[in-house]
Image (cartoon, rainbow, N blue to C red):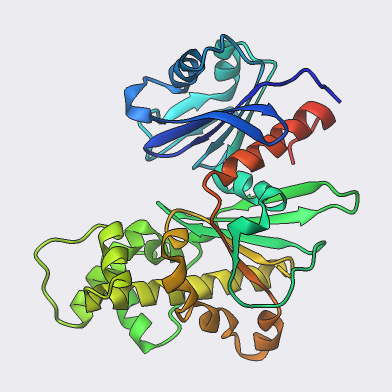
Length: 329
């Protein structure tokens, strides 16, 4: 094992902000800072500014989580002002021995074994089967999906996917009406169109159309969830109820596709903020509503991840595996 590889720079890059930390020993982080991406011309400048701000001249190992598929050397981020970057050029400019770029849900999946149980809220099901696949899903700016698999030797492997773009399937006539409203705007209606932060707004619009309710200004996702939680707006409550049910459907689709008897884990930026409402919603009922497979799904536990920086944990595991074992999990 390479013991002199610390400190390591670990970061979670989003569309708006970049969260940096210094990993000083395995899974121990210091100097966590959030930088606005728009304030820096690129990742290299932001990373150097972070290191300078904490009095570190140089690190040799860096791990990054990004909200985009990682394919080849070139990376493109639709919602980030940096947009394009090269893995090899970033490594060269920062003078690194190694750098890891991970899709954000690849990192989230790898974080699961390292999250303390205090940061996991269970929503139904029976106990986790430790050695079985675990499904990971999470609505935020989009809808991320991944699967975590445990090797018999104890190592983990994550399989990131683009499951949020699977075709939305209405579960009843009411959802069919919502689908029809959205289908007039988009030729392909994916689950991500509904089950995401922007999806909350789209559901809100569709419900207003369905109920013949006119609004002056479309509320933000945060306004919708806050009004629903505080029982201030019946349209917002209907919107959030639909959101929870639809998440139940797509989560159970993931569970039966991957045999997730290790549990389904929900991350992202939406659900952890509405945890009490979510726990009392129809999510679990819809999750188990698979006809002949109901008994199968009743066994599978669902956990909401409430850890503030879970991607750090997954990036750390991936970076350490690459350094010491020579492969990316």
